[in-house]
Image (tube, rainbow, N blue to C red; front, side, top):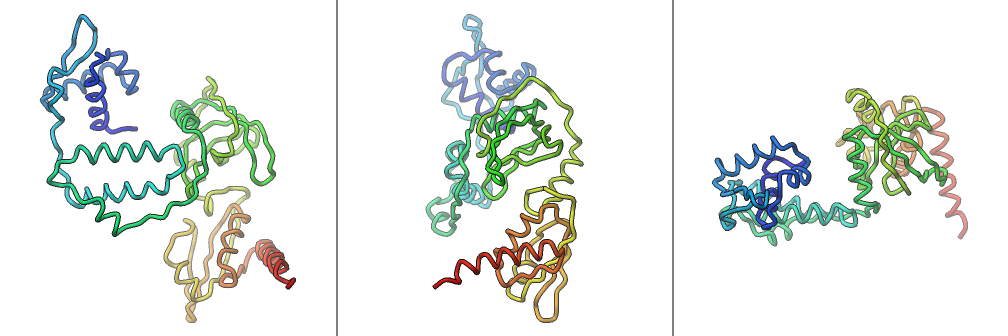
Length: 322
């Protein structure tokens, strides 16, 4: 949702096009009520000194002095630096529908900055680099439609390809929110087929339709608790107590982060540590543990220990042949 300042800038740009937009047109474009629009126009005239007027013959607005700009706003050098860094961080979104939108928005803000607070972008780019990750492609229209469904509490019909079973199923879902995790976007929704909350990766939604059927969403506290209970993102089972021992080298990294809200970390004299937590998806925990190789050992539960042991044995067998 844009801020009011962003909306005022956009309204001025639309009026400056010289198309005499009507009240209905502007309200529709910015999804606001006529009262809000009139408050915005009054602010632009009275506080910003813009000569926005209404032409009765055309029933629309025009700018009698389009050359006059919005008043400059002051930013500190640190704030401008942060803005420039934000532009570099867009490498995380290369390949997604948001990259051109975000890049264009930041460039527009930079163009409006007064000269006295600008910094040399080249200097920042030379000092800071963000490596882009591979992004899972999906439709921008789908994202916006699902976002609207979340806001309006409208059900959606989706065809979803399960990565685990490689199976296409039709679901009716109640969308709650869109969530980004490790450069992948997910829809958090109640699935009527599974009768539970689920994550749906947007790039695996092969078809969708927003219905006119409304629903009463669960309360925000319950939803946030459900999201927080995941180890990384997935939920499959009731919470299980997990204990993992990391050797001294890996322990230095483990102790630097909060991996789960239920975690406790006990340090040992030899530099190793014990990570304990309650997790709802042991498959997800297993994949994470395997990234540490011999530096991690599952102590409990026994089912997870056996699963990791089996996976390591399979991997070793691939190297058994010369």
